[in-house]
Image 1 (cartoon, rainbow, N blue to C red):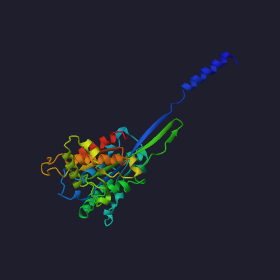
Image 2: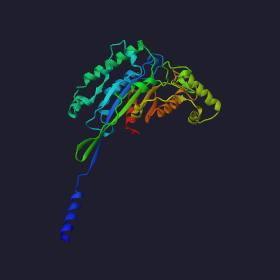
Image 3: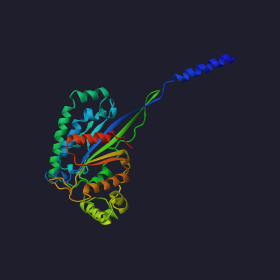
Image 4: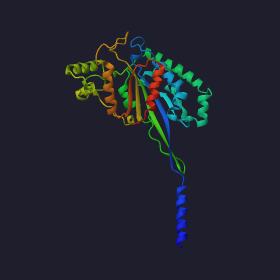
Length: 325
């Protein structure tokens, strides 16, 4: 073969190589939003007054899902989002006629065009109306049948593999495009921050770490902190030996937890002013952050009571916009 012909063949190879289609990877992000209200005595009328009721916050998420959450992070098509309600203590519903399936909004049952039609042409209005009624029924029932809000066992048992979505296998759209379907399990936990579900006593503790977090433990911690005559609360906590025993649940590594409505019982109920320092909320955040980290949760945020529905929705949107770790 002549040298000229060889050079021509090499040149053609370089040309074709340069024209080869670029390999692409598309990430399609889906939201699996799990709303979990703690239906303990924290919801009793007048006991712990707050600006906005749980019912209103939950309803606002369903009603504002489209377009505020549907298009979040520039998502525009193909979402398989799901919103559902899961209780910290499901046994509360045993004697009721309430089914949590009535709270489920699942877009995975639609193709993209059906989904848009459902969300934009009023076809979801009937479902939204039903959800509003069911939420009120749930809270009316819970207020007359109060039980402990078992947050510890909720994280341990209720967040199972059938509820928490893991990583999906990459989908080969065509020869040059791979689609990665990424599911984000967003747990919206409405609780006052005190973990009181009956698991008390030394048998449920290892030293200063227990399966519960009561007002007494918080008060004991505050007393020791003030006695230590230090100003660094976090540093004192790290050295104190206090904490909540970690939850053993491999699914928590795939969960992101937004804790809202943490209620500080040490604040003056009429004025909202601080009566002790550090207050309960400041101390609870230390316990909860340490607990969630040691239980495997990588992304979480701890917030006190919402002053409005708009504030709640803004906090949730900002939490979802933050990149998952």
